[in-house]
Image (cartoon, rainbow, N blue to C red; front, top):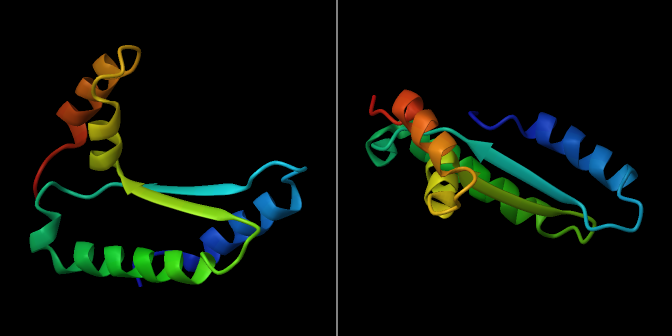
Length: 97
């Protein structure tokens, strides 16, 4: 397994126990190379994420959101206050394996 389900469940329990009338959202953000579609381990990781999302989605106490850093960077590339930071991070971490 590539997804640490036990750790995500621990975080979920912590969020549920401390939500204090607020919506509990567990966000899982992960790195993968731009050529992830060619890497078996990346494909398996994504499958495990989808399976976990399906299982935890059945509980009303918590919302699970997941995205890769590539998706996050794409979503925020036009955000003025983080665009420069995203550019620098991509220079370091956006590479194929």
